[in-house]
Length: 397
Image 1 (cartoon, helix red, strand yellow):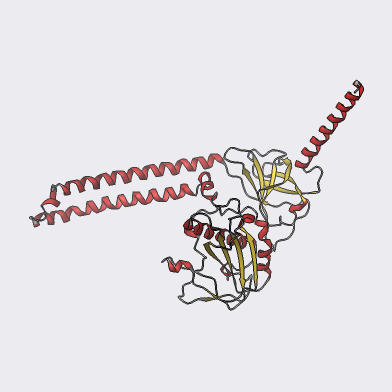
Image 2: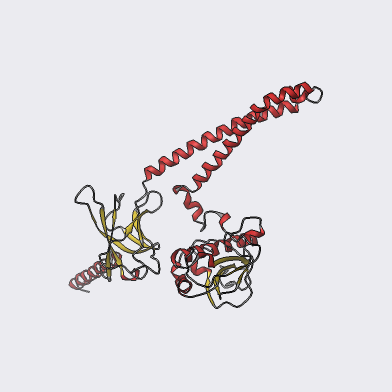
């Protein structure tokens, strides 16, 4: 090959690489795809820059095209976003924009929430609502205050326990008034006069332990630690059976939606939703049709620990119910849950399990709430089964 041919080939290859790079970068910035523009206003943008990601449901669907400072001190900072046309069906007038951080110290990006089914559509150039960003300095200050309170509560409990241990040791050794009470009734009279002080000590110890428990609970729900619990798909195991019934009702459903668990959840042992849009068909049916009540039934495959799989299916049913109630307009008391654990027919191919939404006609008896079987107060106060409501989507008065 001649030198001129090699030079020509090199130039053509360079231009091809340059063109590919332009298209790759342009696709990330939505330069070569159909977009529309929305705006949001904030008091401050805490490090958000031009070109930052815009995510809808956790998926990168746009970029920040411009950040405009206010003209007067009383105005807000305006953030202009370019979003892909595919988001136009799920972003509504009641959607909310927040500034989030990747990890603890990562880059800032905009997160846009799904709108509700009954809300109006957004138009190009509209301004949608926003929430003020969380200041890391404020969170650290609150965390410091919680830790200080917890430390003081532990110290109070330790001192009270030490006093009780000292008293118990003396009684066991037969020392003091307690050891002599058996033979001297006069000591009993004297002890009555000092029992008030001991009761005060016990009250202080109990109050110290209570303060410690309350502060530890506050730490659990703190922003910095909440992700540890949310990574499992739920924050409080006590909530799993709040809307769970003990069995399926008699009768045939008027409609059934079935989903492989692998389609809805991010891990085989997790109850954290990853593909909420798959539930749109069932949510729209619940919002737009009359029915008695519905049950979210979650089951697992035959592998793994039986007790853990039961808790996992209860959690999956709960998070699917919470998503449907939050994003579609119907009476939440009409939607129940049932985690059944291992099932031989639960998507044996993948071993992940299944989620089914069974919708029953009006007049179907709702089985008792599962909490009544464990001694926990049920939402249904009567011992008899409750009749389902006859109108779907009716809000509680």
